[in-house]
Image (cartoon, rainbow, N blue to C red; front, top):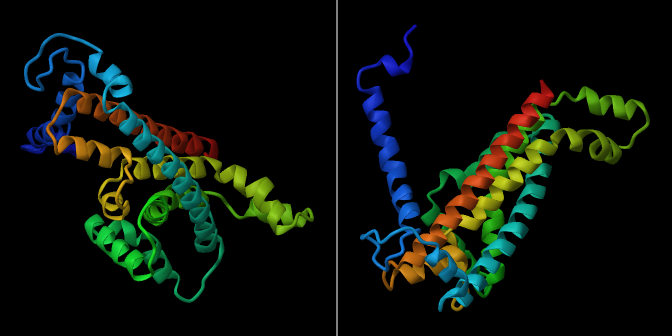
Length: 267
């Protein structure tokens, strides 16, 4: 049987897709080290613009926005992961119940609905109930949006764990809570960590939903970057974008590695 690389045009299409996807990221990363104030003319290697992010005129704004992004991401990922664990237990260990398929679809709905639609619907909902947009509305929206991202790796991990472990614990007179806390949760931990990391980076990088529900005077790092870009692309924007890219790659890699370690442990 032939591999996919032997099909005519596959290599060309693969290379073209990789270039389209990653060439802009490479350009931004390279020019973030540009000593020149120009974003198109190379003036030599320099860490100048990384220093400007922390000490330049816009540093206080970026620091406040970064703090908002990090705290919201930690809280949203923690809440989403907790809800995802409970949902996974209900879906995998809860047996058959009426509406199970509909529940599964509802949990994964944020993955299928266009983000702009979710953003508009969320803003309308907050306005309808009289909730003032700001930090709390961003947090609530991120929790809801991050649940399916935490749910998928947790469920994948739980599906590979036989219920015989819990049954053995119950046979040894452990309560249901003790069986979960001392037996099942440690086995689920790689999936839980992976789900948390994935939810964290999704929340940290989100722009569309955040921009709709943030309210006046409230900024996260993506919205602060967007506000600066509207005044013109400057080299310090490339530097902060590169740092966000590095953080995103780090967390996604950690999520992948934790999942792999969990699979190896299970096997």
